[in-house]
Image (tube, rainbow, N blue to C red; front, side, top):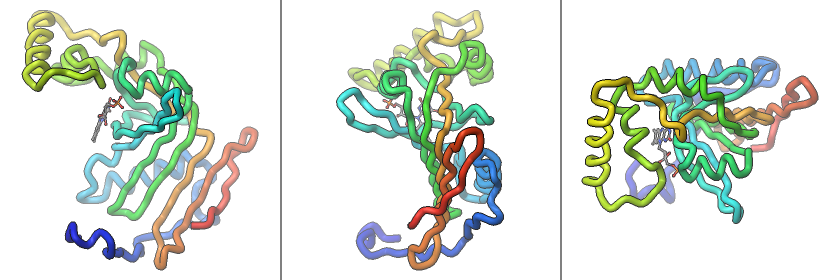
Length: 215
Ligand SMILES: Cc1cc2nc3c(=O)[nH]c(=O)nc-3n(C[C@H](O)[C@H](O)[C@H](O)COP(=O)(O)O)c2cc1C
């Protein structure tokens, strides 16, 4: 697409369909099917990139992309700085929304849920697997704070590198994982003429109810 064409460019979505009769009854199983397909799709980089929303005390929502690092029946896990903007806002409301957009597959998945920090033990295990430079940057960066310039960040990195010269870099106490525990999912598959397929999974006592939403 040419940048001048954003007002007129149109793609007809033809790549797939979503059918109540054949989707998985369990949204986590359906998520796995779609994630596996996203991973297998050539040119779809970082299929685990997911937008996470949070809401400030004044009601202002904000979004940013993070990398999904795991999921199971309990929810979807990503890692970040607990003192960042998102950290404060997620801790403040205990609620989050997530959004996966896989354009190459004409798909979107929305997840609404509650959010909580994972255990220190779980965060330690993940942190230990990160490359040393990534572990150092968790110490060097006060995420979301204003810094004077790039040189300041580079200097912070050198300082931390020196400080942890002869030891394993431990996890900073303010860095770790969050788990979003969903109470609703929506799977969206683009279709021709904008008559898209939208299947919502809503928590109904111990089961998941599947509902079709108008596009
Ligand atoms: C592809 C991609 C992956 C990212 N992954 C993470 C991540 O896993 N954790 C994280 O804290 N920030 C990640 N970021 C940076 C965030 O989008 C964001 O800039 C940062 O977390 C600060 O957000 P905040 O100020 O709202 O807290 C990623 C950004 C992109 C574009």
